[in-house]
Amino acid sequence: PVSVANHSGLVMKRFEIAKACVAFDHFISLPKLKTHCHLYYTGALKNQYGVIPGLRKARGHMQYNTKERFAEMLVDVNAFLRPDFAIMDGIHAIEGSGSRDGRPRKVGVVLGSHDLVALDATAARIIALDPERLPVLTQASRRGLGTLQGNEIECIGDDPERFVVPDFVHVTKPGRVEHLGFLPRFIRERVYAALLQFPHVDTERCTRCGRCVDICQADAVTLGDESVHIQHGRCTRCYCCHEVCPDNAIYLSSGRLGRLLFPQREDSR
Image 1 (cartoon, one colour):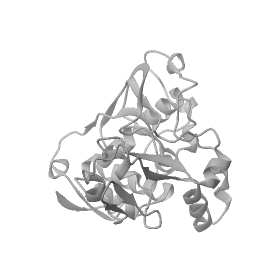
Image 2: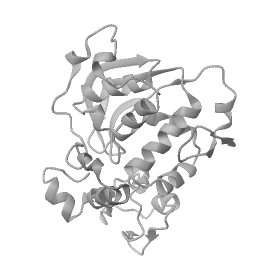
Image 3: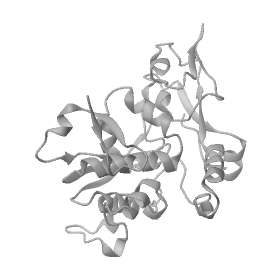
Image 4: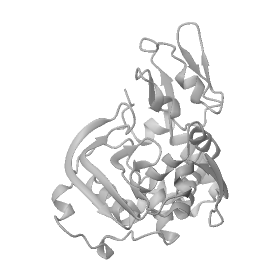
């Protein structure tokens, strides 16, 4: 990896990326259409986070541990890299938790665009998400990285509305708390944090492989005699442990407030 200065960044002024990413003529991104346990949706813009190598990605989850700050960081990465084109695989999208135990769902589309915001906005509408409620897209649009409004996006080829999946399963559909934008940021962050899901351990599945311990930058996961233990008081809820567990032994579940406001939200088991 090499360290680069990001003068246009709002929260990430300097970061380390794979060396190949500073010596390219053209940059083409190949994202997958899927939901995301923290940001609702992950696509072309989120895909650039992959240029940050190894455990540095996990540190980013800990450092930018709210939806707003993580979204700002992702937009900073895209503002620096500026991919020339993105081709999204939406033939079989991933619904549900959107990570290791997400479920494939046939959508039957391949999307491509020079405008990654327009591509992600179109993909989000196909899986029945409002792109104007997705933190990464709204911030990228405000910073001039692309087009968000549907009536300003020109689609060549099949009409995207033909492929809309109205019952696509989301981790949580945004909408109930995003309207709290009038509140001070520190209050919004506490409300969002109270609604996030916590990782829990299924002790019958856990094989004590230790991958979750290795990736946790908050030192919230420890190895016990029979399974791992997660200290929720230290957990930043980046869900890296959930994503790397090879045995699906770590699942996400809401606290009391989350279950009250989102009674239909299932845990990730």
